[in-house]
Length: 338
Image (cartoon, rainbow, N blue to C red; front, side, top):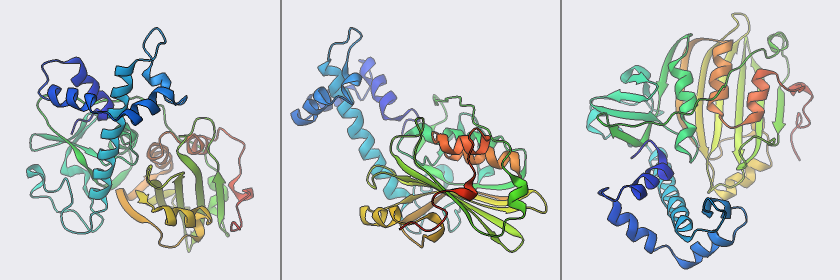
């Protein structure tokens, strides 16, 4: 599968009359259902995508947008099924370039299984990508770059994406540079934390519109403080939740462990999740780990990895960068929601 995603891959085919897939592409455009085409041409939230340079509605562009959405839905369904496959060797571990690789119980393998570079993870003449947490193929780039660039001495385990595999020869990747970094939480307060500290943020103006809210909790367990964060989607069929967990040692001022995952909810499970805070949540939904860090992760690297794992969540970015006057201790959801 192309690392460029459905939109860029289909647009490339549309521009190249000699592409081997051009015949199937033209046939798919012609077969777009009339009802779907009408929806794109009349929906105020979508028509801007179907307008030509002079502002007129372009039926050909609308057909392409319907096709892009349909291919995106199919890819999301395939990725979800692969990530949620129980046991065995789920994709892409069946690939010949990974035939000698044995994933652990979480479906993760050491990052050094691959030759990691900004363009992807190379092995055996092929390029792999890290599993993307959202529908968009570029939602995994920030945390991939953060993991590759870590200065802390950690053992890094990752989950390769089940679909995004390409021959190394002729491989093209897409990178979008984002200034995501972290600094200065109130570490002194966390060092003496005695009771749970929680927060819930409704999405701000820059956070993805498919996010319903973001939960956060710090909780002391003996000499360590556990951190959990989850970004919950508005609809279960639209995308999974993004989840992050870490264990902080105040005495050493380092994180001993961190892991990120996606959690797939059914509509009924999501309804349960909406009524609970993260600190009260039991085993709801299906959680699939994307990566794990074990070792001494310093606070600066931890905030970078956290913000990158939640790319497009402006509440998380502002939290780790201390760009808002917000104290989680006085969150309105400190007590269990009713």
